[in-house]
Each structure stands twice: as structure tokens, then as C-alpha cells.
Amino acid sequence: MRRELLVVGVVMGLSACNGGGEAAKTDSAAAPAAVAATADPVAVRAAIDSANKRGAEGFNTGSADAMIANYADDAVVMMPGMKAMVGKAAIDAGMKGMFQSMDMKNFLQATTDVVVEGDVAIESGTMTLEAGPKGAKLAVDTIKYLTVWKKQRDGSWKIIRDINNTDIAPKM
Image (cartoon, rainbow, N blue to C red; front, side, top):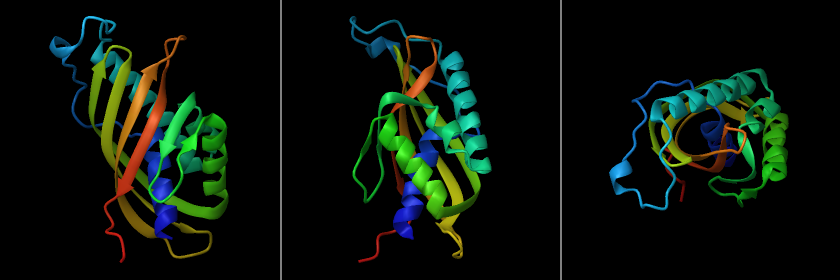
């Protein structure tokens, strides 16, 4: 059950956000000359919040497709206790499998920080949810995450790297 909660946490942390937290930041003074001009951090934060809101709505309605839409074709999702899901097809299969095998509710996520440099944004935050195997008692988990977004050629922002971990201590 713990591993399943971690899976839920990673997937959700990267694809859904209720917004909140502090405003986007940038440190362009330290940027190398070869890096493209930093995008407007407020606009990037708004784009990420919007994408995350659609992902959260997908989670709350059981639509994996809404969450998967936030990932770039070459994205990598790294969840505790699992091999990395490399590419959108693997992420698609992982999320759809999660919805088929788990009951989940009360997903809450808060972005605490977005750092923007060039065409890359790094989002960090926390989330809580109740989850468990289908038909079992649900457990509450608190998770922290780090998500890397990249501006796409069409101007949208997509997740390219996603990682999270639970605050539940491992059982030895």
C-alpha cells in the first residue's frame, strides 16, 4: 500500500496543482550568456498553475488523460520504489494503471516555489491525498515534489522531469 501511495504522490505532484505559494522567482544575474532570456516568471507561473489545475481536475474525476496532457513526449517520472517511467507512453500506462488499481480522493497540492531560467521552470511543493488499493481503507499521505517544466515550440509549458517522495518513514 505504501508503494501505491508513493506512486500516486509522484504522479499527482507533477501533474496537478491548486496554485498558491509564493510568486515565481528568477536569478538572471547568475545566468550564463548562452542561456536564452528568462521568460516572465509571473506568466510562467500562471501557465503552470493553469496546467496543474486541469491535471487536478483530471485526478479528481478519474481522468488520467487530463494529467498525462501535462507531460512532454520525452518526460521522465521518477517515483520511489519503482523504475523510472521514460516517455509519455510509459507515463500513460503508469497513470492509467494507477486509476484502475487504486481508490483516491481529497487530493490537495500547493506549489511553494517556481524558479524560472530561460525556457525551463522548476516547481516545488507539497501535496496530500487519501489513497489505497481498490476496496481497501484509504490512508493519508503527505508528499513533497520537484517538477521541471520546459517551454515547448508551441509556447505551452510541459513537464520534462518529475520526482517526489513521501514523508512516511520507511519500515525496516
